[in-house]
Length: 106
Image (cartoon, rainbow, N blue to C red; front, side):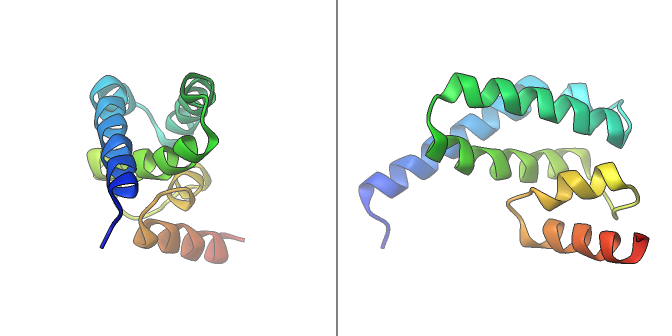
């Protein structure tokens, strides 16, 4: 059973992820994967500053990437930029897909 603190932390993370997707999701849609990676890096830099809490940032980042990939209906990995994004997702299947693509692209 989760402690009230960890349950509260999880709710905070998911709330922040939802807010980030609502704010930024549409901006990613028309972009190609290299542009998406650049935008994601900019958002992450600002997010780290805004949150001011390493533990919270380390929980939000992979959850945001997971939700972003889901939002984009990302499909199979087909580029290095897409693999880089997938590799940082909170979902194991995304990370595995990135690893498989990277292993076969080199």
